Amino acid sequence: MTTSFTPPPPPEAAGGAPTATPEAVARVVAFFEQLSPADVAHIGRLYAPAARFKDPFNDVQGVPAIQGIFEHMFTSLEAPRFVVTGQVVQGDQCFLTWDFVFAFRNFHQGAQQTVRGASHLVFDSRGLVTLHRDYWDAAEELYEKLPVVGALMRWLKRRANS
Image (tube, rainbow, N blue to C red; front, side):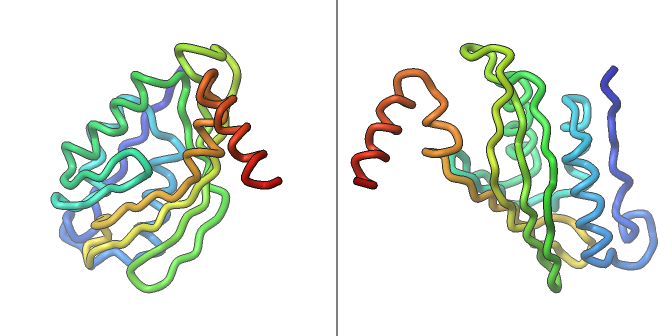
């Protein structure tokens, strides 16, 4: 049974004081560690309307575009999930390290894959994410795991290191 996690609105949006960044970070971590397809519709409770999201494959702005990335993740991969392994919070921003665990739908079916990466998040005064920048090595963490491309990437890596 999949449990859904809907983050509460930031306190300021509910009439309270501005959210402190550690509290905002805790909300983001809880949301992503429990993320399910149903939760994607609530991502606007974490992101400012004009937030930017960038990773090795995407560079989008606005909540609907960010929702689209996570919707695509759930339709393209089997059982994707995030495990946050560390965090550093300073001022209005934080840096999270994480493991992204999933299985491919089209090949190596059922074989668990792990991509290790990090996210740089910047928050506004309401505790909403204005910038979400993911850093991970697409060549090592993803391309090397693909059938034909993976063999080429491993060969290139061996050549570069010899």
